[in-house]
Amino acid sequence: MEFPVFKTERLSLLRIASGDLEHIYRGLSDPRVIQYYGVSYPTLEATQEQMEWFAGLEESGTGLWWKVCSADGKTFFGCLGFSSLSQEHRKAEIGFWLLPEYWGHGILAEAVPLVVDYAFKGLAVHRIEALVESKNLKSKRAMEKLGFVFEGRMRDCEIKGRRFISLDIYSTINEAL
Figure 1 (cartoon, helix red, strand yellow):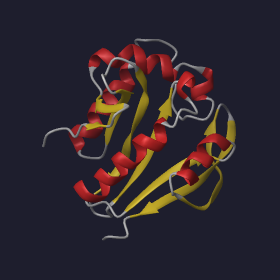
Figure 2 (cartoon, helix red, strand yellow):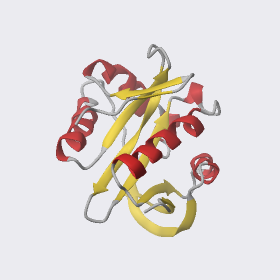
Figure 3 (tube, one colour):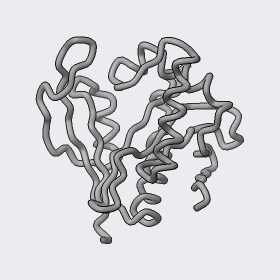
Figure 4 (cartoon, helix red, strand yellow):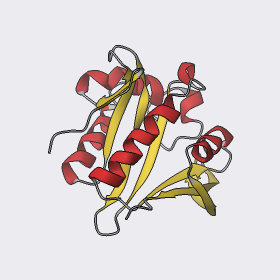
């Protein structure tokens, strides 16, 4: 199967490549990005683990992640994708992050519907869910603006930095299936 690529007037969603390592490191080492994100890396070399994770999802059929960049592909904004893709249960988990200088520019509002539509129509996914740290108000607002429905909170369900965190569950359903 050919990797799906999406383009709008403003954005391109492309396959993450080895040349993107520095961009991924810049995002996943930035304290503002990783404050509510579950993964971070202290060095460029350590970030290779994330690159392997992206490739592993694609190889195993359990997810797909894209780099989100300018329409010409020259400016990197962040990453967006699915993990925990289950053909059996026809669901996936969506995740994303943007470099802070691109927050509030409507990038997710433009990019997320493209991959949600692909999951629904191209992968026959019925449910897409997002797990958002309860204190991450910006991401929670983004999920609601994107039409995801708040389903509830898993209290103290994970440990991050030696403290328990709660996760809020959001979802969208493919009503056509």
